[in-house]
Image (cartoon, rainbow, N blue to C red; front, side, top):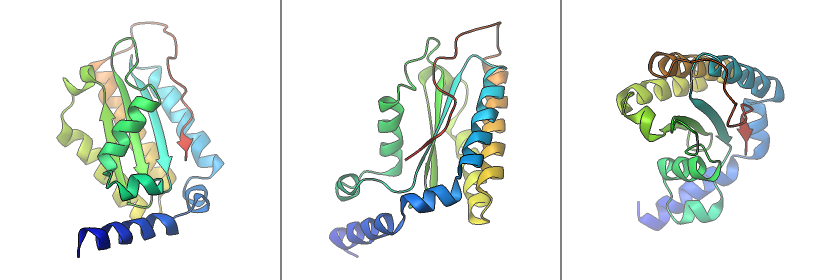
Length: 170
């Protein structure tokens, strides 16, 4: 396929993945359960965890050939996940149209947890998503990430919650 053909096929896949698809995969009950899992986990470590689910990327990003990773990095910046006191924010980005998951971690987290570990968490999620287990897979991934963060950045007492815990559905 040519580059134009690939972009058109990708654009069509994103166009066919609607906000309604996102709401079916991640209904309010699932988003609330994931938010509670994030809140509970953040009580055990000093990191901040955000979860963003995007049904499909904007057309201009698709046509500009923005990769899933590039989109995750942009959202990491846009939502201030990098701007935590200990530089240990983590973003889990789910792109439903691409059927991919990306994890972006701030510099202090990247010094402790390697990309192979993050890729394993992402693979577990996408395998669960393929079975239609969006809530269970996401909560299991959040628990795994919280365990990793607790091991490297254990809580040292009360602290401010720097980022909202509620997942974002775009």
